[in-house]
Every structure is written in structure tokens, then in C-alpha cells.
Image 1 (tube, rainbow over the protein chains, first blue to last red):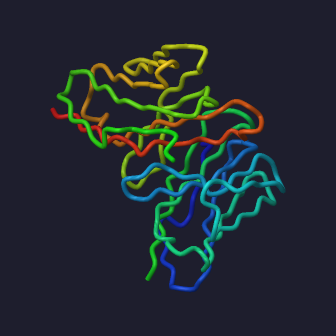
Image 2: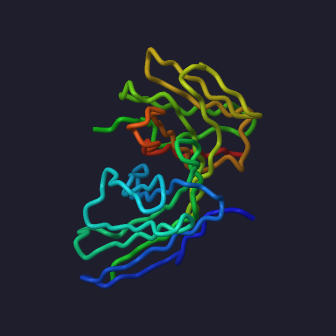
Length: 112
Length: 115
């Protein structure tokens, strides 16, 4: 079955640590996206990538970094510079220039 | 500045009746609109979409209406079922190349269908 896999489902981080969230897709999609959801708010775009080895900042990129070395993978690193990292993180993918975006089941990140 | 607004945080409907979820947008560049359904601790699932060249799109129990002059769209679910209880997100995009296929989401509306 094709889909998007995010791991782990729950993640805990100590203050001052970087942490990397995994996102893998086998849908053969060119474009991948990272969103953040906070309680009572919609999804906000962190970073997106339309093609391998290229990515752009979204609306809330500060304190985050990404890489896109393979078509199937788009890991997100939450750095210690992100002041409020506790949130639900969602990864999505789509055909380049196309909709809809398909989502994984998310990773919930909490600060210890 | 919220470009996509869902002004009703929640909606409660009796099973079998119609559910109407509303969404407003401000950016005139938006020309493609989507509705997603989300259960707790899961990712959003795509429901239905509409292009700005149309004013209505139907898929089974789900119909989306678009009023471009009012910058307003709505999702109708008829008849509503208890399994429809979820958070519904409206999202907007622009097909212009410089926009990069990004989606802008509303804050969501919690729909509760009572049996």
C-alpha cells in the first residue's frame, strides 16, 4: 500500500537538544511538505520541497531545518533555536504542481 | 493576517440532517480550494476540492460550493452520519507557478453528529 510514514508517533525532547522527525513516502510524489499544528489552530507550513535537493521556507521556518537528498524522504530537524517546539507535526506529499496533498499520521513532539 | 478563516469553531448536527461548514478567504490569488477531514492523532484526509472555474462540486454525500465574488466556500454533508464527526479544515492554494503549490489552512471546525 502506498502512503506516507512518519516516525516516531510520539517524541520527547530535552531543552537545548535538536531532534529529527522522519517522513518517508512511496507514492512517487515529487513534492513534500512539513506542517505544524497547534491546539485550536490550522496547519502552518514550515518547509516544502518541490524536487530533490531543493527546498523553500514556509511561513514559520525559524528554528527548523530540512534536507531532501532522496525523493522518498524529507526529514525535519527541530533545533534548539525553536522556542516553542511542542506541537503536532505533519508531513505531506503531492505531485509537483498538483493537489491534493496527502498526509502522514503525524508526530507529536513534547518538551521534557 | 489569516488568509483563510473558518469562523465557527464547532457545529453540532442531528444524524440524518444537513451539515454546513463555512470558509472565507481574503487572497484573490487563491484559485483552488480543498476540504480535509481530521480525526484526533491522525493526519488530515482529503475530502473534496473545487477549482475557481466552477461554483459547485459533488462527491456522494459531500458538496462544495464556491462564491468567488464573496470569497466564500461551504461544504455540505447530506445526510450527516455519526462517523462524520471530526475536525474539518478548509484549505486554499494558487495554481500560479510562483506560489509553489502551497496550501493555506483555516483553523478548522469541529463537527459533532448526534445519533
